[in-house]
Length: 95
Image (cartoon, rainbow, N blue to C red; front, side):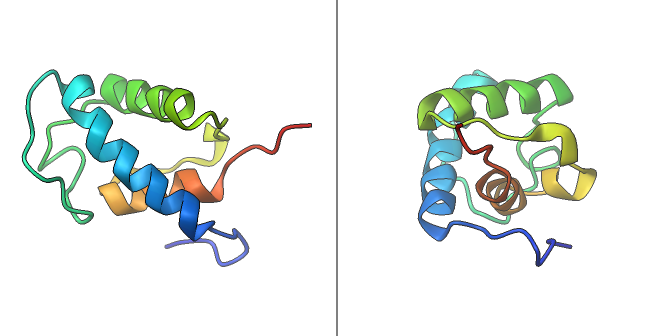
């Protein structure tokens, strides 16, 4: 369940979704058809724990952001949409 106290930047969320779609084939090392938002990262796409970490690191690099992964939970990794929500809501502000 999303934390209502966490503000999600809708523009950033859109960028994250597009980046996930772009980066998943590289992380999974195979071509993918269109990746729907409701696709389950593990069951539908075959992402592993190591792949999840690689995907988040690739997202940080491609979007030039830093994500606070200390708060990430199992629910945040259920689908493409939940990961995009988490990333958009947990960007660490640069000092």
